[in-house]
Length: 501
Ligand code: HEM
Image (cartoon, rainbow, N blue to C red):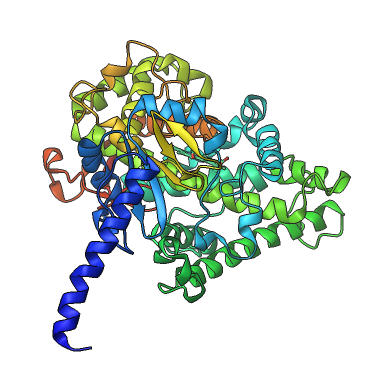
């Protein structure tokens, strides 16, 4: 074909594609949204921080918006009322998950509490984890574990004070969250604070979090799945296999110890931890929970529970260091409530710390660790506000945008915990303006552990230490840039110097 024919045909093909897509949008009654280009759709609208670019687009197209990412129809929700329509009124219809290609390795998608469709297998896992891990009764019984892990954290920071060492706030919160969970599950520490010792488990968790956070082109163009163009699936396969092998080894040791044939004398046979409880059920009735269910469930809880908790602590400290008067007010409250107590904060103290609670809420409003929630998927066609949300559409709920919407919050960009002191706004899934843990049947089952860990860690860190920025940097010059990934992190890690109070 010569140049002239090509230059005539090319605009014609583009115009035709434009007309087809436009008529498709008109006829399909999809929510409004930017015009999708042929093949790539609206992918060019996504920046490195897609929660920010979609928040800007929602200002034009409204809080119910549709876009096309490659072949995937995506509906973006950016207001509490519409979120309520999705996750309360039509909760069941939107309870599916679009499974990322990186999860489809070693059969993980068939065991995954996070990614399974909301059918029988998911209900069974959710019920078991609620009963043996997340119930108030189980959490009350395991408080001593979280107390011990927070004590370890404070001991480490004390050592840093003595040696003048700079502390990576996100890093120490990550180690504490990881050890709190791994002690709850199988009575073991899985990481050390210093980076010299071997950190096989911690490194594998971090690597998997990193792979999972990268956008995968194969998710937008399923035709590319067999080629895995970015190598993300191969990498995820390696990380998941490694983590499953470590957890499998721990289960093997425990089984040996339970049968009394252990060569590891230091492994107690009755820990009464989550692993023991799950093995008891497994030995009674394997159809209730299989060995594979157990290893995949542990893997999943580590991935879902650690980074979310540690990034919230890091952002809370960023905001408090940025505004010393708020830090001082929170510290005064904790000190007063803990008067005469040498111990670290008890979980029963949290109810008497309304300002600390408000600080955590305010942190989750401005810095929700999962800014779009975990993506949902429509399992049938649903009409919302007169628009059609088609079956299999991916639903992103932009809680980050909702947290910064001036129609909902006074001075939304300001960190003002006081806004939560009056009224009953909570993050448990009833106040749709603040749903960092989601709402409805797919909401976060770990919310109660997170709630307890966040208050104990933050309260203890501010009660015991004063914090200065590394290199005499002034608090008002602090960087607030974000880095989008599996969780929303601060772009630069918060490096701080503690002094004992
Ligand atoms: C799901 C947030 C801590 C386990 C979720 C979802 C969010 C979330 C937004 C998805 C909700 C939805 O799709 O509608 C958070 C935050 C945390 C946190 C902000 C801490 C600050 C934890 C912890 C655990 C955990 C500590 C467990 C130890 C899970 C699991 C799911 C989940 C298993 C999947 C639930 C399902 O799909 O049925 N979390 N989470 N999370 N979270 Fe959390």
